[in-house]
Length: 408
Image (cartoon, rainbow, N blue to C red; front, side, top):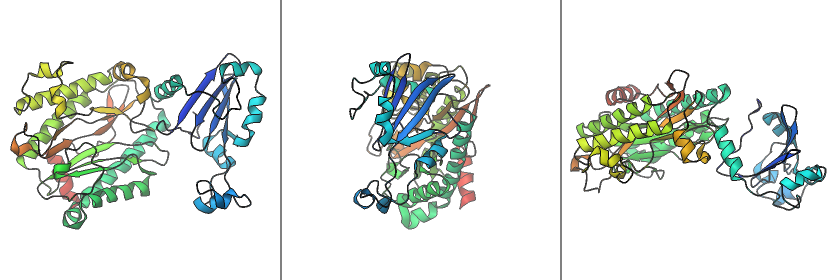
């Protein structure tokens, strides 16, 4: 990509793509109707992005269109602003029909029979896969953006930990959620995803984004949060904090088992290894932990078999994912490639095993019910192994206790 770093989010965009030997064009059909047209050129393609122009004074839509009128939404970037930001030629969407009419007739064979129809091209699954695969390895600029997002996230966790006493007194989970979200909005573009703050019996709920309960003394609070940088690259970090500053014996035991799985999984992240290597290691370590606790009623081997998977009751989610522009990046490439393609330097992964013992789960010993522990770090694959981008946050229980105490 050019230095302007244009981006397209896969969760709110449809793609269309057709090509032949003479002409290539690509559409990114969003609610705003953006269309990118690409034509072959020596060494690559010439690209022109067609965007709707902002609606300013003098146009009826200025006051009549609540979605685009600047009376409603304030000043909006014009085409020159977009061109400068994206390092790309940008024209008015009104000029698109004329551009398509001027295209070589042979180009239309690869697209829709009539290019001036409202839906000019069909969505392309192949393009979604290609764009997803292109994000598997981040370049130097992208890595710097992710590093900055992680650093801001670590600072956000410090702010959250410092507010634990206030959250116990009157603010609850909402107070901690608001603390991180305010930090993310101030030092980045915002949160990369809905912040999870689960205290006490809410901690075992994987995506407790309601954040509407109290923060309970004697319990742990699980915080899963990430700052989205202003470039829209997103971190994803989790720590489970003792509300009173010290883990109970049962909490410490579960935390130690998750830490063991976490470190084992991280050890499998490096060039030439696969995502499956990391995931299988994490699952096996969790299955072993459950067997040691007397919760897993089958052998570890049986649990790890395709028809077993009994350990997944207590770890129903995955154990990691790629991160980048999307918090779950590269997800369109298909399971086979995602799991088994060798990792390369420049890949960035979140690694996040956990154990989730719900308060009403009678298969769990009473002293462990209501404990949810997750540890999540962001790892950059290097030429020789990996770098933990979020290493400024402690992983072990004793380190977390000391860190929390220093922030009170």
